[in-house]
Length: 271
Image (cartoon, rainbow, N blue to C red; front, side, top):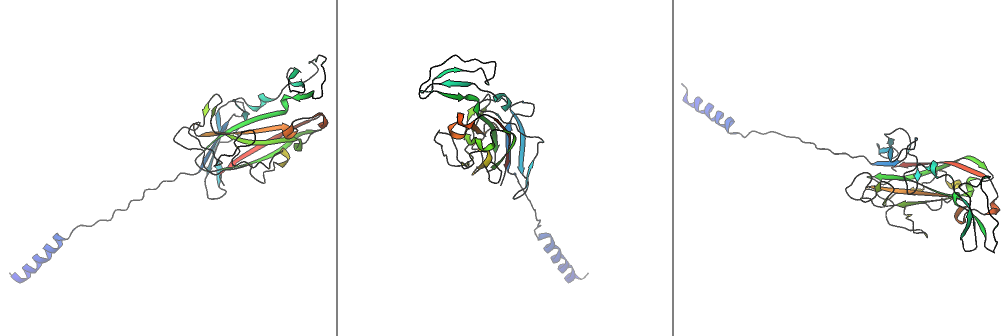
């Protein structure tokens, strides 16, 4: 036996046995949450509250997709009633102090009657149904904008330029379903108009339906509505649209008679 060769072989074996084992472990955790905006109100059948728009920002830029077919229908502000229920309103005779002397029952028509009334320097006509306010609700995990386009369906004596428009945001409330307890104002810093309504993020230059062309958003968001942990309703804010025949000053006899009706389509999107 060649002892020298045996010793060398043994030394080589010891070197192999003594080398530490090595392994490479590759781990790759990934998380992705798309920007999303949830819009709710009523549906085409008038059921409310119901979510009818679920928009996700599926690509950078203009890559939004709505995962729910159909559209949200607005509700009468302060309620969950579909806007069709808001049509109507009394025509009243008011004195110079604004006190209502008498009113029609609903929309003034031939079934109504007035008593003779005294006239002073300020006696005037007030038409309650010539201001309508409607709302929809939004919850989001990202900033969003809102475009709006008004299309006339009836213009007879009045046009879209005769209909004043304003938009505001209500952070929290209870319209039959409590909302907003975990929400923040999506426009960022609070800005109030002369009536104390929240208009942060609202383009106040769009003040008639004729100016509502969709070329510029009626609302530009600065942050998500979800401020703290909560449910969809708790993280929602309410957008309130007010439409007034005659604009900010209301209707006057000098505007004549007629009828105007429009479809207003709001598009919520992630810019």
